[in-house]
Structure formats: C-alpha cells, structure tokens
Image 1 (cartoon, rainbow, N blue to C red):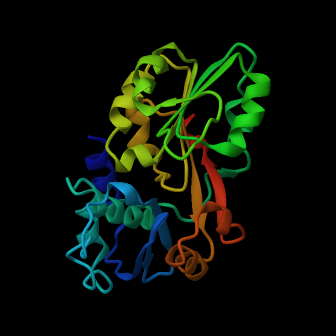
Image 2: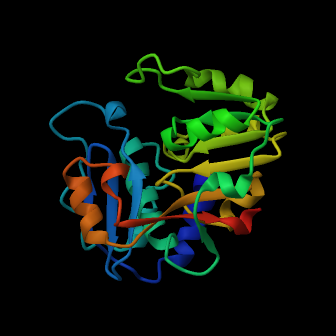
Image 3: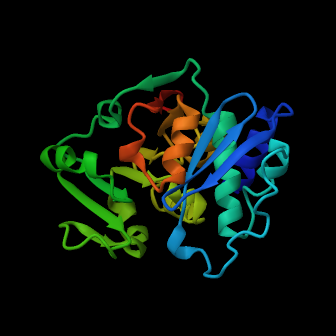
Length: 251
C-alpha cells in the first residue's frame, strides 16, 4: 500500500517530465530529469539475480517520460522498484520551503528514558544515541558488519520494535518491501522516523501510515552525484553535492 500511495503521489508531480540520464551503481541508483532535478535510491546489489543482463530495459530509459518509469515503483522486480523510487525522489525531493536542515536527533530529541530501535546501521547517529538513551538496539544484515556491538539480525526487529519508544527505520525498507511491516511493529512508538538518501520527502504519503518524521536528501549537484554513483561511491562521496533535510511537517 505504501508503494502504491507513493506512485500515485509522484504521478501528480510528473508534469510531463522526462528522464534524461540513469545510473545504476553498486551502492546507489540515480535518475536525472530534464528539469535538472535528480533522485537517489539504494541499490541492493547482492539481491539482484546474477547474469550478464540485470535489467532487460537497459539502454531504453533515458528519453522516456517520468510517468512511465514511475510505474516501476510498486513492481515485483527489485531493480525496477529501485528505478521507480529514484525517479519518484527526483520529482518529490526538491529544494522547497518546509524542510529543516540539520541533525535528525536534534528534532526528535531522544532522552534518557527512551528505548530506540534502529533498523539499518546509521553510523553517525550511533555514538550520540548510546550516550543519551536508555537502550539502543540496531537491526541490520550482520554480514559485513563484523563484531559491532548491539547489532542484531534484521528479522529480530519485528519482535523488538513494539517495545520501543522511538523507531528509526531505513528507507531502503521501502525498496525491499519490508517498510509496511516495520511501521506496523512500531505503531506504539511515540516517534517513527524514516532515514536515508532513499527517503521520499512526501508527508502526504507517509503521515497516514503513522510516520512522524522524514529525514532524507535533496540533490544540489545532480551531475556530480551521477558521477559518484557511476564510480561506485556512496554517502561519504556525496558531501558537498547533496543537502540533508528533515520533513518536519510530519510531526
């Protein structure tokens, strides 16, 4: 339901826009539109089926109308969903009034009595949260995370989130279709926050599902971002090319 709502909302923003460039990188996927706006979505490269062709529509995306690519938003195919969500973000995440720059934690203001469930490992937030909250438990695919303390297998999040006062959920869960269940598990939390470069900054989409805050990015230098994506870069390489913002209209 969330993906369908996102698609319908993004279609209202399409305004006959065209896709001018697409880059599916190892870390992110980026879509550039004819008005110069760009959107990002995380690439689940390990979950894309192997083979010499990952996407049979390759070579046919640039020049198509954005509304055509938006049909991929709720596709059963992972890579198509990624492309659709990146296109939606290019349409939605524009540098307009209503967004607040700055640290997400300064907005949600966690305290010493809070139990925080974090779905997805957001490294910059972890040290500060550990100092100020009662408990922080992080849920992530543990492969590649080594022996980082407090990181639990992602499937355990559904059982723990009902015990939390704050849920911080990666927006990549929109791409892998787990967001709905994660939000349902967080329904008793006083704050539910969606975080990451894949976040569509669309309060009208997420407010009905009980989300309180959206924390995402606005691409300020689209060509530089597409270059980083094409060279397998990620968030650390986007510095200076994006602006991190919070959609406080959801609170």
